[in-house]
Image 1 (cartoon, rainbow, N blue to C red):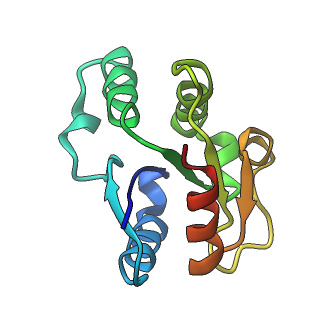
Image 2 (image 1 turned 180 degrees about the vertical axis):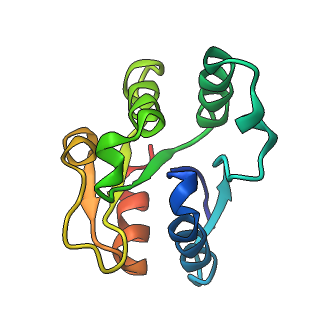
Length: 137
């Protein structure tokens, strides 16, 4: 069974959505993944400068097959989610595919994230897993 390397972009302010998505994926039978994300307790977020943080995030993304972005409306206004979109699309050749996941119960999603995404899915285990399998090179 293939193991997928995933970078799950998220706002640390909305960490519970990130936690719930990771839990959702871990509970899916016949789906294996390695999580390269930067959770709030990761020491990367104490980088001395924004340039150091940007490079640390780029290094985390490097081995990933897919970049997943939780597409809540906060994504439009989040500097770092926008930086992660830039990194995924501009700093790798080929670029990293972006999967946008509309957070559970959300009626609105970030237009910025939607435009950058190669695929947009609703909060459903099957749709997220199917999209990862489709997008991963």
